[in-house]
Length: 134
Image (tube, rainbow, N blue to C red):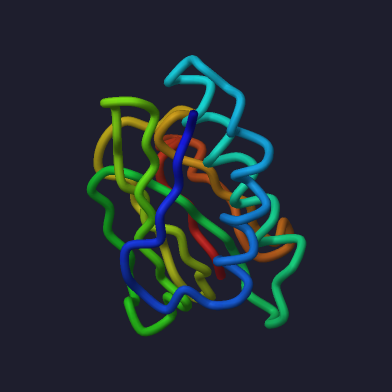
């Protein structure tokens, strides 16, 4: 059974609610990669769908990353995802522009999920791990 724990951070009502809603969707999954993909995708979708501020992007990532302006990162929350003996941590947060997010390691659905305002943000066509919001 998959387990999700909020470790630290703002743990806003939005992110906490997103994590809680995802638990119901992943609890019966038994394959680690399936759990991770569902967690990242569904958490970001729930964050985005329930945001109360006009944020430009919602992101969950579990490896090293950087942003251009840390003052424009909001409600950053560390979340631990477990399935049996397997576990990993994710940072989930909202971002406002003008700002850039760089995933410094692997992407893919098991590590990264993001959604953003299409009128303000885009993925760098030369670097699929760089989200730029104007």
